Image (cartoon, rainbow, N blue to C red):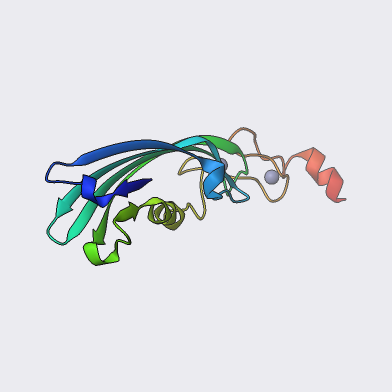
Length: 145
Ligand SMILES: [Zn+2]
Ligand SMILES: [Zn+2]
């Protein structure tokens, strides 16, 4: 999203935009963006700087780091970006790179499908959220013999 700084006056300027997620190239092995990223920015002029109140909404397919199941997760984010007048080049303020960076900073490192996900049993490989471990059952014992 780009805005001509002159257009930001005393009154806040609000802009909305949808970004195609693939354009920002953020997918990782375990996290894929779905649909578009919705961005709403509220630009306010302050003395010597521009404050941008950013709201984001996006949906991602996230693989749980414990049970490896994929889940569709909708996220919301809200934060403030501050630009000094001296940082703004040629009267045009571009916020995309900073918004992208913020999303990457908040990247889930060990995402879970739910806080108490029980994961996969290392012995029998069953998803313990849905199935019972069979490590101690007779079928498993016969395999070991
Ligand atoms: Zn899980
Ligand atoms: Zn087991």
